[in-house]
Image 1 (cartoon, one colour):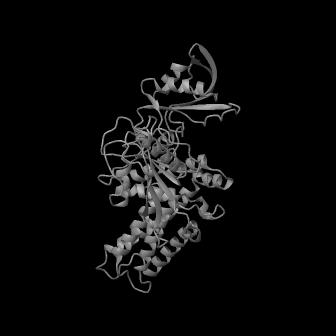
Image 2 (tube, rainbow, N blue to C red):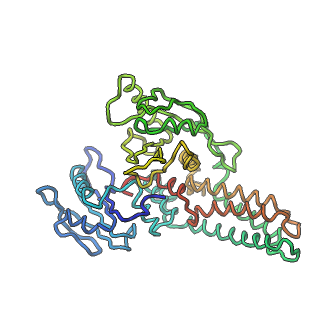
Length: 459
């Protein structure tokens, strides 16, 4: 669960991308949300607004006054449901940096974690989980088709579809479970087997059409490279060994132990609609940080690590402290999953939306495997219906479809009553659990961690 569930703190972040060198500066937006919003504005503005609306204000930067536009939001009528504000100013790195430094130096105000504004919006009931994913898709969209897919998530259209499927299945499951209570009374049949089989087949057809099986069953020849990156002694090699199920990398408390680039195939849970498992190449690297290398060999190992990171298909950014310092420049399309490794140890600073994992006791490793599979999933054709389905949704819908097939297989349509109602009900319950993740009724911590682990700061 994102740490944003505790909204006692006020968060601030730059919500717009920095201007490119040499480009016209344009405008930048500093975003602020939390109970201390008004006091924080008072610390940097000459006359801070307290009422809702757009206000022309003056910000103090050293001995200079800077005209700014402040958009003030009063709880609960804001994106996060809290008191909030957006400060619109010139997109100058020095100006925005000094304003942000002044804000985060105030008592009770801190820098927002990646995706924390959207996480707070979700936890306040302002967004569904699917709509939160729509925010991430909108940010990452590079084509009109991708924007349209994000719009469908943001509008709630897909959420309503998922709710409809879950409601239909829940109604059928209730009838089957009622029949279990009357197995000793042959004249009581809440739903005839033929009717149940037909309803499950129809629901499965709807899910399969949405997924577009032909597109989702295709596999590329390229094996995705998943790279473990982070500072020295961040637990990367231990996690590497645990995911592989054997000791492949040397593990030591001494920083700089890993020098070579280690690569091994890693099988992930396969799609229920495809017999073959997903296979990726898991890569363990030397640790990199802002400090100098231990020696010339360590410098060479760090350079190899930087090169491997920039060519990865997915990066697992490992940091037991939860600070997640910057990585080498990556292509915008490369997914980065933030992992707070060594989750068995206490931390004093943690990113709100990092996925906490522990290689020693297996904590959240199943969620990590699913997150990796989601990140490297093949995106269906943008022209198909499945083009609107994000990887996490694909996997949940495939799980639901698989359990529907198992439930249908246990039904004899011509029988008077179900021969194995407990088996049918069990498979239907598993299918409903998968759909409920998408409908918003079931949101376990690992699902939230997977959703928000790849968000950017300020959103």
